Image 1: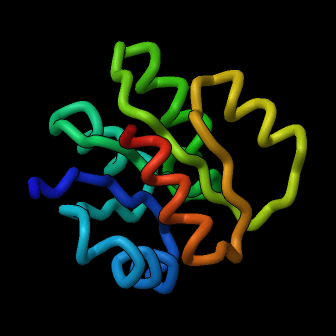
Image 2 (image 1 turned 90 degrees about the horizontal axis):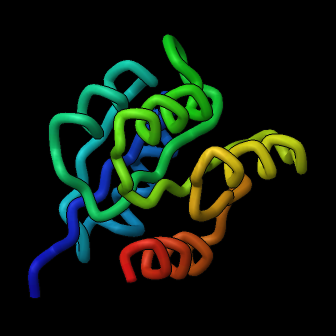
Image 3 (image 1 turned 45 degrees about the vertical axis):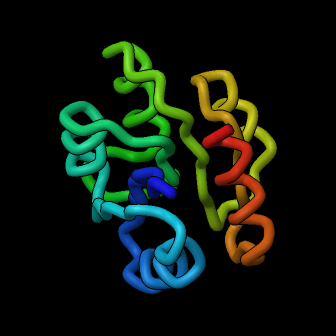
Length: 119
């Protein structure tokens, strides 16, 4: 089975480690620490999905999503956030995110969302 490539974009090392533990066995993971690094990787490499935090240094996730869509990058994006905001969720979906997951997330919730995004 070919492992799908997933970009994990979050400035919190603990979140990156958690997602690596949850998804690392079944997927080829790449990591980014801030919005600029996320944008550069997402525009230069091909991914099956991107899991991206909304609040990141340099560029926030919503701005990265806007720029990716403007550049024609169609990769499914799942937004992650510790901020439980209906407005942020609506904005993320309006900008083209396929899903929105609040932190802390459950293992099964992440797996299901990633499977949906990759389908």
